[in-house]
Length: 251
Image (cartoon, rainbow, N blue to C red):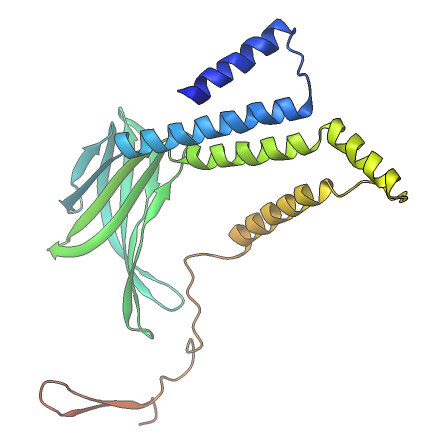
């Protein structure tokens, strides 16, 4: 509430001055307070208004959650580079209008001999839709986890606004003048470009993060044994003490 009152005060001051911002640091302060308010709003709404259910669903079943209708359309097998998965297809609608199609998976990695759940997500400015497959609970029926999380993205937007406010504050001329006077007093004529370093580092991180999401599939799990013979090994059965031996293709 205090942050909201501070924002109202800043807004009234700006309106009275004819929408003139006194300085870059003042604008940065407004952005910082606005970012805190947006982040708090996102946290509060996400915590108290999120909706989630664990349900048993088979192809053809439908569940309604948070005003959205999730219909289990079909279940199929998908062959990946180093896994085999059960992939479910869900049609998501709101008030009879199609919203998106989600395809969560339950993957089995034959080399590592483990099972992983690959949830599917439909992000949005005001809500995120999330579906994950649990375990099979019958003929074509699965335990399904469905979530509707409103305003969860606002938590990140608030952090970005806070960071933006900090960089805008660094652009204030008063700080540059003070640094210039200190530089002249020290007897150096170097240009004051140090304030651009944090902004450059931040932009570089954003670029690398964006390229990482674009160039690499986060669902891909590399393995050194793809397209190679499986190594021979033997294990002792813990129940009866017998030896279980697996031989390569030539054995």
